[in-house]
Image (cartoon, rainbow, N blue to C red):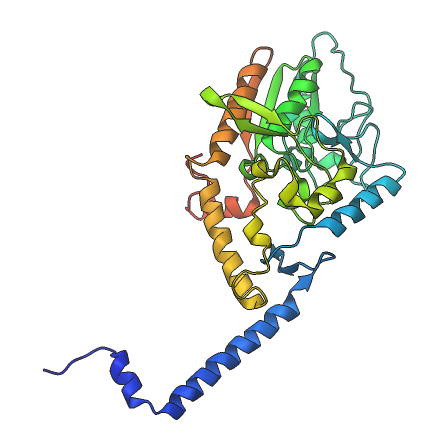
Length: 350
């Protein structure tokens, strides 16, 4: 009976050594061209780390020079929209303007009208919005923000004040702390918590530049860890003086909080990684590992999800004592497009 299908043993028997050599040459040539293309498209940052289309490629380099540059620029600026804060990591400065002129804060350190005050007038409904750059409404002007449109919509039938407590780069841990230490003073009738599920990752971070290497926020943040009986314990509190960050980043292995910085994995910084000088291999390896990491971040048993939900529960429970609390899901554009196409969010179970 005639045997069908591909038999690799018989294939190599039929090939002469010249044909095998030619095949190897073609494969090596294609790999060489691909390596050159990756090197041409990619770039090196100030610390000598290779990046490909916005992705860090192993082996990583600690962003010492990049952070030192941001700190120097921050210290040299006459004013800054974001400032360091020992309780929150960073916050919006009072009466400040962003570098691009799009954001303006009032005397309360809130993006909003200049006439806002802590004291509440009779018969006014107060709404406080808490969260990250989605609530803050990065990338748009003051009259295009979520808080502005909400205020415009509700002010017709009601006497309403909307306070935008959102801050760029926040995790939901910082959003909770901003309510606890500041927003709770405003006698809010409604607290709206903006849920951006990428915050599951930010909650595991302490040194902001290790999470987002090109961040213009050269600060550290407080971080909750899960204690016994599902309690939440705060570390890096008060936060590290931002001028100490270059020194810490220069010697991360000696840092006393390195075990709690999820985005520092010593092996990722090792130049002894297999094929560490082959950029094509680094790109393939980093993309594959990135896909695995995303799946792990949104696993219900992961530290990231358990911590996210514990912080959210604490925020909801405490704010509910004096306010009606609402949660608003804020998907990214790619996530929303995925959902519209009938697919689940990566964080659907969360």
